[in-house]
Length: 360
Ligand SMILES: [Zn+2]
Image (cartoon, rainbow, N blue to C red; front, side, top):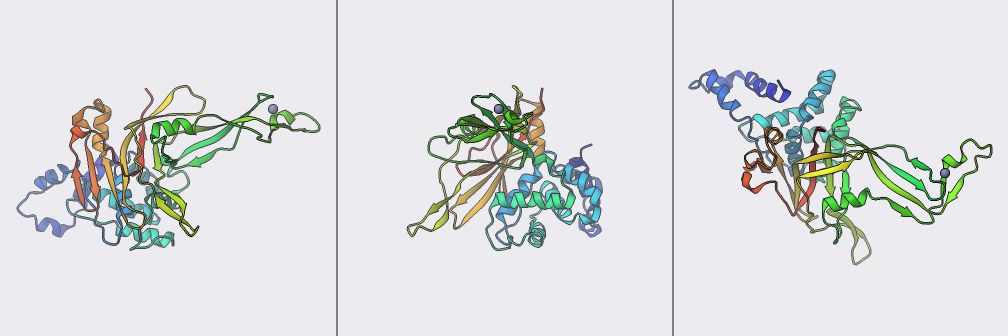
């Protein structure tokens, strides 16, 4: 039995006694049926103190495959000390089970105590909030706890005349940034560009391999070397940020942030090359966070495919219309989208979330 299902039952058993006294007309069995029948539906989150960025992140984490299980696994080891993890898992459980409107104020309160850059009544960048939250969970639950979101990458250098290959040290990443320009506004094209080898002319780089074993350790300086970015370990959950916000200079020459209103094309499937392997890792889209409005005042909404729907997609053909159920979440209002429409293609998409498919 999955943890997700265990929680559906836990919710039933943990209801306070007075709740049952008001439901006298219904037997316990009927009540269980009523709650369990709602298990595929999700609930909205109230926006009480400009918390739309937090709400959007909670909706996505509630449908992130493996996330709740991870919190239980690592949170269980920490027990009561895992305050942030407990608050978050309560919000996620409420989203997936509650029938009324809920809010994520408790989560934001916990984040405010951990990061002084967070406040109520202030618009926050959704990706910054997500990354700070993952970092704070790592502090609480241990370094390996957020491995689900962590990938590793490094650069590979090939030198022109000695033909040696060298690698830079591995770097962890929890999101990749897709820059936007006017010619390559497609995630697929950009990812190809990101991993394409580029020649560095007049690189002035030294090949350390050439100096090895010689007494003088004389290093050979190269004019040309090629540099290539490699994903050495692909994350289970791939987070792509579409760089909507950029620094521009105003008429007085001051730098300020501005928002690009250029749509980016993306697909519901994506492939990444991992290391030197010729086979590619496959990903499928399960959530999107969109930013509406301008940099001065905007609103975050999320589009999510429920975990149940993701499982159905895996069981049937993903493009089977019955299995492709998406929800649009704007704070307390959650709307089920027509399965015939397929995955949402949002001109305002800001963060895309893909999950890795098992290798066949
Ligand atoms: Zn060399």
